[in-house]
Image 1: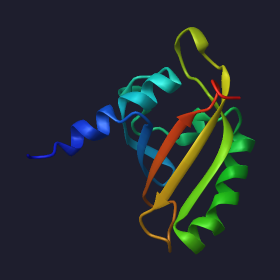
Image 2 (image 1 turned 90 degrees about the vertical axis):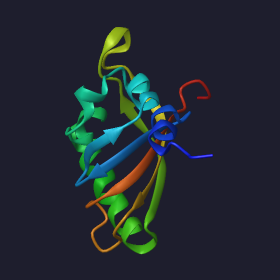
Image 3 (image 1 turned 90 degrees about the horizontal axis):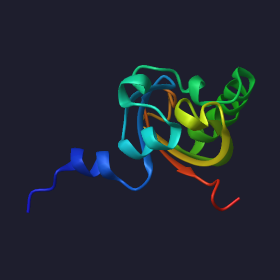
Image 4 (image 1 turned 60 degrees about the vertical axis):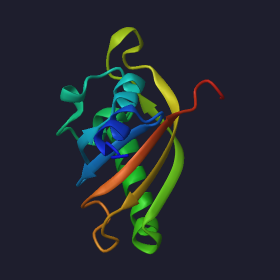
Length: 121
């Protein structure tokens, strides 16, 4: 059986993002639903638009850098912000896990998962 990896990416039961220099290169349907946005609204955007503040974006970026350098992986629970729809600007707890494709330049390219924790918090 031939596996359709694009379909698996699009329909995964967790939010998925391919990133480059802390920008969203591509994302799946689950991530779009979680943040209340379309793929077109998110592609090419900085992750900053998903954070409640620029300070929080900078703080987490600085915190994850040495960990990504050392291990290539990073995960945490953080507050994120919905973008559109009836829950626009609502904040929610999110579990984020990522892998740097190049540990020497961890923000250069990565694969990230996002899981909405609001139902369990």
